[in-house]
Image (tube, rainbow, N blue to C red; front, side):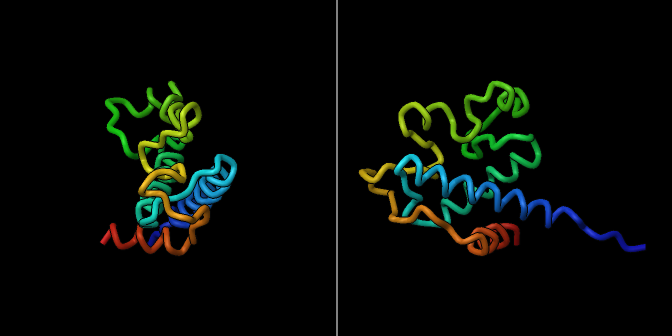
Length: 122
């Protein structure tokens, strides 16, 4: 009997949720995605993976000794405290317009995120 992998549709749903969150948050905070959109795609994919595995979009750009404890602490759950308080995004997902790495986009195509994710998996 062949098993069917049902993880991908759920993963794609969470990925789309994180994409929509990132777009809305960028617009609300008047920040922009990185001029190199593949950076944005990787960060959104990391947030989606953490949301699925840990139940919260823990910052994917930091090292944690105990991810579950960090989720409960909530300091690094996106948007993290430095972003909310000072518009400082370590991941370069939300960039202020005066930053040299800021692009002009506040939207990103879901298919582009999937392409970047899939290219990293191979």
